[in-house]
Image (cartoon, rainbow, N blue to C red):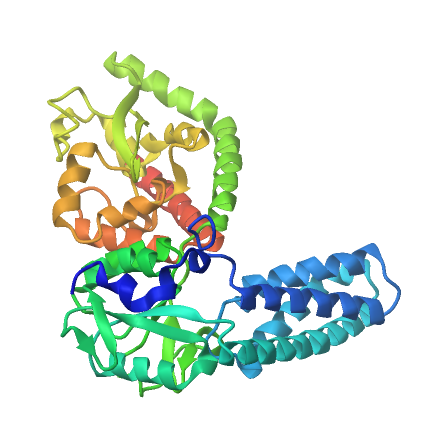
Length: 456
């Protein structure tokens, strides 16, 4: 089937109205409706719970943020209030606890009770409205199914038979005949990002790997950056999963696991933390760094700071700073192994403790690196590793770091590159401010242990 055929087969799916004027997907109306219902419910609760005060008014945005952070605004296929009730009540209780220092306890908990009731009722009404709009065809998401096997055909049939789910399948992606069931096979798994753009796809439902795990992971990461929500149907899907129902989705009795969206707004917080922490550490550690530089200069006569070009992200490179630990040798840009005989005794201690990396706080402050992320690599090796190690280039989707999950797991120096790549990609997939904090604490602990061990 030619690449020109999908547009002809799907007609209105590729119209400008489906994409929006700028070619990007608009905020889904159900998400906006849920957020509005929450705000109205919380404002009503504040109004009826007693005297309105600045503290009570601030309660509305705090709980709204907690509801969003809990994932209750995710655009679910199966809109059941019971699945989300626990998270809603937790968010309301959390906002109330934060309010206790500024409101009497009885009034705060009265506000919590009214808020819980109004939010649950508002969500119930919003869910009912969304279901009605879906049945009438006013709220329809365009779906691409990955996999042409039995499960993929089942999913396509369920979507066709249940319009209240609000999903319309455009076709399949993956190996197979030109048609699977009632729908066409529009391309291979590798075509997924292009199909998402061409057909304005809003959801991708993965029913089988349709290729190697590494290839599929790369394609799905790319597809997610194009704005599509990704759902994985487990196989066999008849077995119960150790995943809370509030985190699952469902397609008429078939469970589906949503992938986390690509980090976006959270990276602004990550950058703010990088600036503040790196600036503070540089001020505190400046005497230590200057002392190390003086020792290196006096013992070797060479410049104390070593500069080397490293790849720090997709299309980004920077001169990374380190304390010099080796005598000049060969071409350090293309030499993988470190000649032990060229390393001074003080340099060995710096390397074991990883204190030679301290000048990279300057790179973090400049925005060339982050405190936590995949370690930057020399362009010569990055190019070669990207050709032979599955998933290596995917780690470039986040800014390189001073330390990382792979490093605190003991993967540095001459250790498995495939293992490092796996840990780097896992870090990016599960990134959170808490994970960054854990890695920084573990890094400090390993540095102290290395410094003590190096002195013995």
